[in-house]
Image 1 (cartoon, protein in one colour):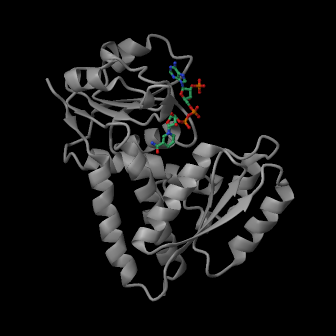
Image 2: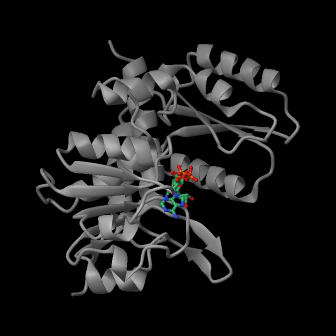
Length: 281
Ligand code: NDP
């Protein structure tokens, strides 16, 4: 079997195109405030990419850059200002923050109404309750979008999620449940992981270990979503051995060009949605 490649780049491009059209009809552009603290090279690249993507669809991105020794108070003061500013629709705090900063405290200080990353406890709770008022975290939202693009009936499928982070594993598990999948969440203490994974109709790999998922983890005909982004001496690698997935699965996302572009597209979508919610007549 040769798996079909799920082209996240193309799907994300279509979403951005449609957003650009909708945004061009607004009287004022949506505004996203981005907070970047420290000089982690990967974070700097992510923020640059987000700024560029915003610009392309007509969202104004305003980045607030701080050195690595920024104080918690400085960040909280800025968040306080951004939360109150009527012209700011979305706020994104680029993670990781410097080690001396309590990230949870900072994320909780973002107004839930502007929390376009969906990391505030209120939005996490509203996601559990399937509230339309929540912001769904961008990577999990993008993964569900990729699955929908296959036009398959997901009801009753066995979905295995590898990873239980707040950013990916837990929210995507929740969303898969909402799709009526039977969901198993696995992690570093899970026993017999490969046997479990071989029962998965949908396998979401979000563990952050380059090419960890090989043939013996993949059920023939499965849908494989590779979330991993691992910088290795041999270049950017996913969590899945792509060649093995191509030979065994029915569908697979590439790295790069799978989940990554969807994450950014969903950030743009959430910012647009924040604008609409804040400007409801
Ligand atoms: P975390 O490090 O927060 O979580 C990793 C999870 O994987 C943990 O739950 C951990 O288990 C589990 N895990 C680690 N090793 C194993 C193992 N050997 N077997 C089973 N489970 C294991 O990572 P994130 O969720 O933030 O990110 C995961 C990956 O996705 C990373 O490569 C990251 O770069 C990428 N990513 C990609 C995005 C995109 O846009 N494409 C966006 C966000 C992340 P335990 O809880 O027991 O420690």
